Structure formats: structure tokens, C-alpha cells
Image 1 (cartoon, helix red, strand yellow):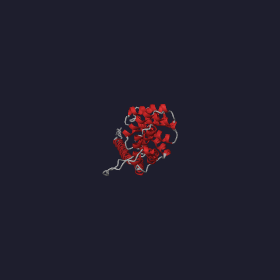
Image 2: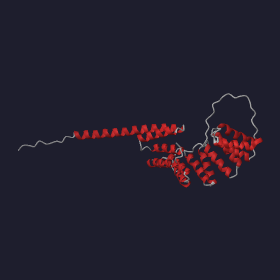
Image 3: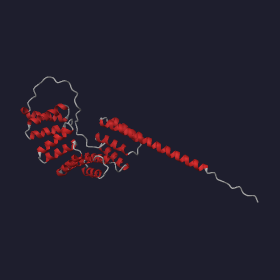
Image 4: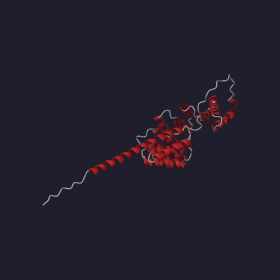
Length: 288
């Protein structure tokens, strides 16, 4: 009886197949990493344009980032910030929420969501988001959420809570001009004018190109009958940005003060200087 020649199934095709699969997986992984890298570059570019207030260019860059990697949570924070600055609040809310769906620990988007909700008049929902952001131990800038809590409670006329949260924000970041400004508003509401004056002064110290604290301190000093200081503050506002609403208000106050704000005598012509940029609006208390 003839012995059957044993049949062997070749094993090498399996190894080849496994190698092909590994190569495909590696290529897919490399492609994903490259797309994320390109998305990150677009978001960085978008935020540069955002800081320059070039919102059309910022929007284009962020949308390009989304095209590269729509699963990247920071894409939606970037888009939300642009819509927030443009006062397109429903679109801002939608994008911040999408970002948090992709990354539950994206506390900057959560804080920014609270700002957008507050702008829509949904103050209690905003407060909830700020408090949730503070529960994240990895949140890199809790003072932003704290100062927004101060602002939210100020809107609700809960002045003691507003004061408490502004103080907490300042403990975390002593140069937070917005926290000093809102704390000044709260003290003014409590008729603690001298303390309010000190806080407006600190807001000016930390954001010297922001004209609103000068206007508020000027009007406060009228109440305190410190006319010299009031006139200096109001003149600064009127001269710093003559076409702004703040400048128009300042000129009306100067006119009402009349002789208490005598005209400044003309002196020798000063050499031309490039003016520092002026912030017409408050520094937005958001986190990029």
C-alpha cells in the first residue's frame, strides 16, 4: 500500500496577509496623525486672525481645520469663539456644545458656552456651565470661569455673590482687569465709592488701553466731587478714541462740568507719536 504524501498548507500567505493589514493600519494611523497635525496648524492660524479681529480669515482657517479633522474638539471651540465675537450666539452655542461632545474635559469651550448662554439671557444655564468648568482639576485658567460667575451674579443683582467670585478670580490672577472692573461695579452698587475707585484704578493699571474703566472712574469721581481727577479721566476717554460712544459720553460729562473742567492751555507742539491701540470694548473674558 502506497503511503500518502502528507499535504501541507502553506503558511506564508497568512503572514503576507497579516503584513498587508498591519501596513494598511499603519498607513491609516499615519494619515490620521497627519490630518490632526494639519488641523492644529489651521486652528493656530485661525486664532492668530481672531486675535487680530480679522474674523473672515479666522473663520476660513477654522473651517479648513474642520475639513482636515472634524473629530478635533478644538475646531469647534475656535468656530464658537468667532461666532461669539460676531454676536452670532446660537451658532456659538452649537459649536461649543459639539466641542464638548468630542472632549468632555474641554473646559475652555464649556466656559465659552456659558458666556454665549449669558449673552442670550440664559443666565442660570450659564452659571451651571461655569461651575462645571471649575470642577475640572485640569482646567488651566479657572479665573476665567470665576470672573464670568461674578458677571452673571451681578446681572442677577446678587451683589454679595458677585463680589465673592470676583475676589476669587483676583486671587487666581491679580492682573485680571475684567475682574477688577466688575468688582468696582459691584462696590459701586453697594455705595462703597472709595473702594470702587480703587478697583477701577487697578483695572486701568492692568489694561491701560481699555477706555471704559477711565469713563466709569471719571463719572464716579464726579459723584465724589473730585473734579480734577474726573476731568483728567474724561479728557483721556475723549482724546483716546474720539469717534467712540464712550468719547461722546465723556464729552457730554465734560460740558456739564463747565468751569470745573477748564480748558487746557495750549503748549508747544508735541512730537508726533504713534498712539497705542485703544480697546473700545471690554477685554472679552473668554479662554482661547
